[in-house]
Length: 387
Image 1 (cartoon, helix red, strand yellow):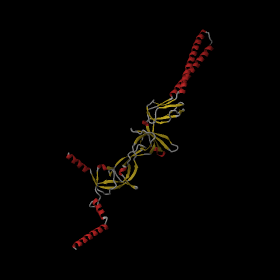
Image 2 (cartoon, one colour):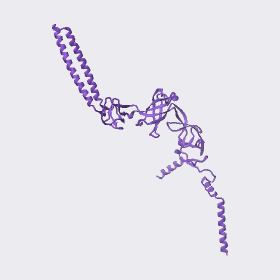
Image 3 (tube, one colour):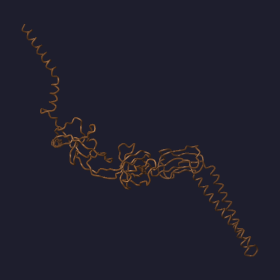
Image 4 (spheres, helix red, strand yellow):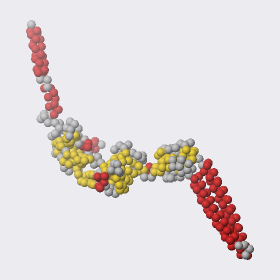
């Protein structure tokens, strides 16, 4: 009987404990949160290494008009047919490098070669006619000295000699033209470069003026940009330009304004600005879109990288290390510096402030901060002593 009574009491105690737990289910979670936060309810102390923070400094902030355009070679040649002939052979393909004087295209010279032979025969005949007229003139001069011929006959012989001499000169000019035409059937590279656009193939008929291929010099690239007309007054020759090229990611290129077009485009009302590239690793592909900014003015301003800033809706803030605590600080952000990618800080921070370089999402305002420099030093000393 006693054993049954003890069993009933044990079951009743267990049921009472379960009911108490159901009435207050949040108590274990709250206890865990309090344990995580510490006995005083404050956030856990944040251990920060020197490389996790950065000091706000005043830097030169570039400002100026936006420039857009494309990368184009300064040295380029559109090779066209100078004679009407059939294309016999194209020796270079797109992308192949060429040296100055290399044969690129051969045209059929059959008909032109016939013209050359005809010009050579005409020169030979004209030369013979001139020699004969010169000998006849010399004979008449001798006879005239003896009084055996008239002055009129001598004058007529001299006229024939002069006409023959003129015909020789004309024949030589025709021969030179024929030789030049034969030479134009072989198209050569005008400079060292790369074939960028092949327009013909073997068997095509090349009329005079037909484009055969293009050759560009990839080492002579420049930025052919355009600036809005209402901003062109701020652009001067010699100003630096920072820009990015489509296809090269975030790589920055630098250049200098070399020339400003004196007239604006009739349709877009933009002014062309030529920028010479100064990078040793300048882009080697023509036609790529580029966009940047002309550094027309440099001002001192506080700047921060985008990684150090946190955006929440329309607000931007940073986590500032203030003494041994962490403070959330709202910012007033200005323009982005195209050279460095940093943003101008117009309000919220001062020079010398320390902020977290890469803040996480679980930080708390007022959270305690401890710099890890002393611990790292002691650890290094310990390792040195162990050795």
